[in-house]
Image 1 (cartoon, protein in one colour):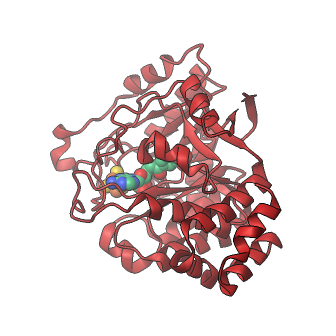
Image 2 (spheres, helix red, strand yellow):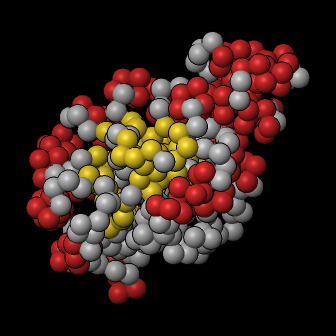
Length: 374
Ligand code: V47
Ligand code: SF4
């Protein structure tokens, strides 16, 4: 959309919204107050127009995806986050799964000679799967597929592993990096606000711990992603505070690749009584994130969580990435009630999904190097 067409829409807005739009055009950073004003007062068409303007200014019509699969070593977890539909306590581990080293290497071997570029490892925090077990897993995966990028372990899993091994974050991270860990996924961030965290996931790593783990990874030359679990008991200010802490760290390190808002899904968990947000609120969250996080290059709509059709629509609200092919290798969202019960898309399906809304599909690797433009 041209600057002129955007300006026409801006002229119809209140003077406060026009000032915020002017900041966006001048590339002046939005304040927390601006973001709150947008959340509370901006119409969805206006927010979408402005976020899309920024997205096209940064990336044109390019929309990234990758060819990836997941390994979920276990859903047995020592923690009890109330929003989680996936985990089983150690005492009930017979209801869950615990993959052996061989099980996990067999998953990797299934992709022998195939064009997948990334494996995403994430799971519950199992008390018997320790740092050295996972270091061996990384080494073994690299022995089979040295070219595969390993994006592994949320800060929650890492915090537990390092503390159990009595290593500092830097020591633990260096050990995993040397074993083959290439980057960190963005999970476990939830909402940083201490009071909300205490109500939804009291017992796992806190906000400062999460941020310190990512900062350490960045200092060691690794990249990572950042997520935000929204649409439960938090309010707009909590979302802005969360993004503010990420924006501050990104100013320091420049180590984050992508911001991924994750919509709370209420299937079969302790928070099932909390209704899910409307699609309108989802799109507002993507758009405000695009406008506020001026130092994040990429904004991802994770289709296994949102559903592929909604992820496709999100491409008009600032989003420029829809994650990957997945190949039905993750259960986190199907167990939480997502419409994607067996999440898998072929490259052709992803390409068509993106082309259908007149964007340009670009296959990327984890670090956004272009593999193929369609
Ligand atoms: O931290 C758990 C979320 C996350 C629910 O880095 C839920 O590329 C919604 O972080 N409703 C783990 N969300 C997954 C994750 C992720 C996913 C895709 C890509 C990347 C990346 C990272 O899943 C958890 C939590 O925030 N989650 N339960 C639920 N009921
Ligand atoms: Fe465990 Fe992660 Fe589920 Fe929390 S969200 S209970 S840490 S698997």
